[in-house]
View (cartoon, rainbow, N blue to C red):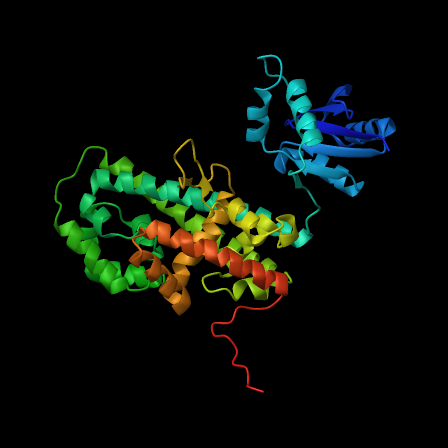
Length: 396
């Protein structure tokens, strides 16, 4: 049976597809609109050349989602080549220029020659929803961090004593700043009225927060230029952070509900240090399908917790973190390893042993994260939950 390879260079509005035969001869080169009728027409024309087609793309989500799902819905074999790999491979092809047609040719040719590329498969609706929700939460969290940093900068400019004593990661200080931003305003209000104002807004520890704020106000009696307009900016930023906190709390509820609906939720959350959020991020990155990776070593490499050698000549044993890995998945294993050190005796003993061997904190945590990849892999493979203690077997 004749086999051909079709590489698609993904773009926002248009894709470029190049088809090669077994000898690398170009059979088709076409620029198509990222629109379903155009894509279906391209699919039909390529299948008219040969029935056995291997499709390849350099983007696995976002602007490639429609094309990928068209191919998968028609039961086509589809592989993924990272954009970085395409960029580096392009240097080995004739010509110094860069065009969509050349990139598509490189994608198709790499798919023709390589047998180690990731095969894309359709994801479950639940996994896709978790991916969308966790990505949205990440965006909201980044927005919150950015606004808190701006809030700190503005507050330091007019009231540094208050900025030093407030933890803006908590709701109480944000509510305080939504009403009072200057030393003079706090002194005019007084402790009793300020404490009552905070209690009416359901602030925990209103008395301690009011005392802290008044103490800071008593340390500054100088009004700086631009204080009035800066106070308005602080008020606006504080309200925005409060709003973002509410949005994140709502999306956390959605993530928890979707995660519990997944068949692997109980197995994944049984691992010490992995809750609903980290478990959802794990499913979003891997779809819970370990067959996509082949082994726990491949999963560890994909997560960036398996060092790779960089040996040369007489230098050996030179290990470094891989340059290409899934940063979200690395966060899952690294963060859960940190949590498990406090909540799991076995993890804490492993960490302390690595520290005793002379490893730095980060190295010891990464070593623990690498070990936990093997454990989670085995749990998912066997469909069983984590057990802190091995079951005692009775002697025959």
